[in-house]
Length: 127
Ligand code: SF4
Image 1 (cartoon, rainbow, N blue to C red):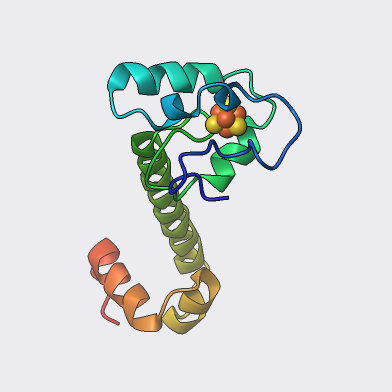
Image 2 (tube, rainbow, N blue to C red; image 1 turned 135 degrees about the vertical axis):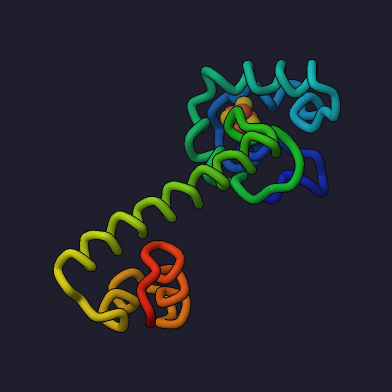
């Protein structure tokens, strides 16, 4: 279920385990900081926390798996930064091995032009 349109907590209808959000679903869609903090804290011991956080990753509203919409946005931003850092490390490694721009682009899954632009910014290399 989506959890946003009917204000139902994420896992309530899908699982027979007892979830803290089942007792007071409105709290998980609080707009105020105190309510959000309370919901996040109550998610702590929930047996579905990991799955719930994954399921609610792109939900615009509510606390899912102990994460508010702002927490989820921060996790996504951190993931993008990490991915970019990993691509940069991979590019540096491939440059050291003398791979062509086309080969590197294939390796990291970027269009050749995107990689060439990135290399120009990184090293001043002409593509
Ligand atoms: S992690 Fe939180 S929102 Fe998800 S099912 Fe458990 S109590 Fe509900």
